[in-house]
Image: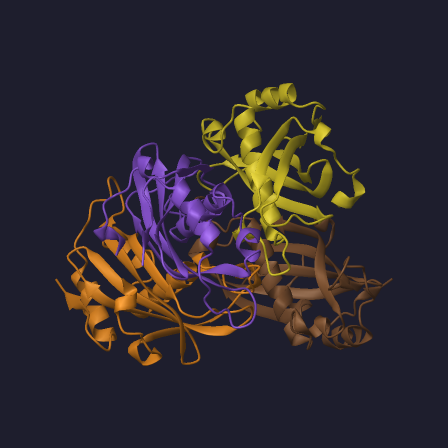
Length: 153
Length: 153
Length: 153
Length: 153
């Protein structure tokens, strides 16, 4: 589980994106309701794909594929509150034959609030959504973008 | 990660709860947007707590505590679609000194669509939210309710 | 505005549907966040369309059309709270050439919490989404279902 | 109803705020699901209150009050789509003894997509939430901020 990994810092990420917490995202405990962190992860991934020149969904659609989430996990270390400005972070840590593993994080200043992992399969947009190889052009862009190259299988 | 565990079946759960997928929960891919499965997990846990006589949040509030999510994970095996009737499932698989681990699942008939884990800490409602022991009365109710007793630490 | 109309009662509606308020829908004020009442309206309309034999979206899709919201309004008279069981209500109050006007309401027992109006245009599913006449079969079903026939233009 | 008012333009608003449409906000029709426009209205009002020096909720809480929505309406003229950059707009058009009426809008460039109205009552934070007069300091700030002074009753 994600707890096994070392806690990330903002310096680990080439992609950082600011976000202000919405009223709609906060629950009666006064903190962001936990499923909303996965919405934040999705926003971070969206900005990541834009940054590497594969804006979602057109970037991969040109290669006939789309990304489908197969696994998500998160550690909630501290809570973001209403109207706080936080920083979303995303990086690709592993590229498999037809899968991508992102590490994601939410920081408040330098403080890690939440970190997690999302695994996606790259699959055909049409039909039975069969897995397809991650496009070489995408791998090149990610590798050039990241501070630490993703592991490969 | 949750992939390592055997895939659960409806028979593993004493708590099953019907749900119909809402339009608001479905994305342009035509499937439930992945963060919404964590909303479903929350609904399943709510019904679980009601079933064991500790309706949220009053049941634990009477003991001075509340549950705070510390870890969430899910495997997305197949997709639920708009207006489908699915079944939510929840069980407590582990009780630590001040923590609870739930296994959660979403079935469509007998087909497992999503399974996952939520870990909560039982903490003081007021002040710095220090961890508190899980109440003995709660442990008794859960143990009587479950088909397989939760592991203990 | 909807304030001008008399406050509806449950007896005005042939379609009533139970709902339990979710944690995800409640805000730090301890009450349902106002945009979620429009999600409730959508659920009520969904059940209405099912009840009259035009389940969304297939019922109208067979006629080549879909419904697109053009106006929404609501009066928030009292607040629903977490875990409360409320009743959603929907009726068609007006059928125009290519439009439908629904009245919607949320009751807690006999108490009116929220009422409102949604106006939809029936339009072609494809292309420029041009307005299409409301199908005669739909009008017949609605008229047979309602306690007070919708006004016509 | 809001249809009766002239369509607003960006030049009518002292408060404009950029927003990018999220995947989570878009439905299977490929457009923003209508309740989410009320979330956008809430974001616009939040930025408005910040701009006039009464950040929500602390600005009015210092006067012992909070804002509770009593009426919402919107006209959906055209649809925002995934990842589009739109502009949120808010202005106070009327100040009553204890109520505020905002006009809100969503533009894509100069094109009006959605406009609407939100009416709030200023009420005591504690107890039975009795209406309280809108603070004079707030009225002064709004009047100085707006291009067209709000009507008064």
